[in-house]
Length: 328
Image 1 (cartoon, one colour):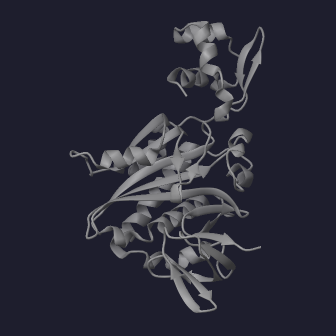
Image 2 (tube, rainbow, N blue to C red):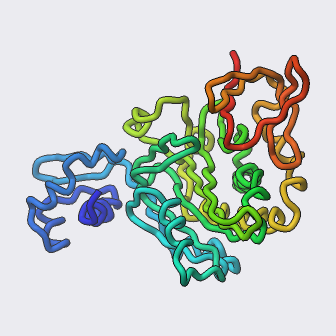
Image 3 (cartoon, one colour):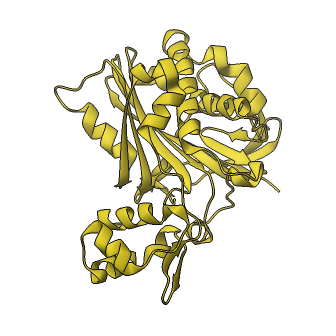
């Protein structure tokens, strides 16, 4: 999506009709430029009414991300975060991975990149993450650990706990976790976490933590997804304040990461199990080589590995090596 398209949509955010001529005059562009900028806009989940003699009206305007509003919600925590809001990016994770490689990278604050539209989002094992304009909260943050990458095995699980705590504080209590990085509502995917690491085995290591949460998915966005999905609107039946949600998430994530950096995953183990959708359920585990293991989920280990009670005995599976699928 082009910058002029965003400029037009921001004009249309009031939900009123605006003629192409009025828009062109306001932006200082031609009427043809306005028409071209809005061509194919529905591919991004945007629904515009076009009425001859009246112009354009945006039926489902989004709440735009606003740094001032985010910082107000962060309150005293705002000094800890360096927030960048982009209109459109390929991947927020990629931006922070490249930023952390810079020689003069300033680690005194927590870098956060959040976007209105992500065009090449990715999940675990090379999967794609689809979202339309403003219909999800998509952001990444970076965190420097003194420990090496092996210490960070349970990191995605800890971030999941922070998300559940945030939802609970906002009165949203129906969300569960699926090992190792999915958020579920009624067994449908609500969001997910992607951890990408840079650093040494002995440390230090930088974790780029990508988070995507479905807020109000358009029918167009749903067509691109080949699994059962849900959004927060299906739970709350009211629009979610994206700026407030982001600020609340950042505070909770920073809180749990500070504990995790000092004590590891163990302090979070029992809490995570209490949120696990598949605990004590019979499941099948698909291994990277294509083999399938079956058993009953019996918690997780102290480093966040999944434990299955199998016919051959108790066995653990590490993060990033398997996917979990419920049977029946």
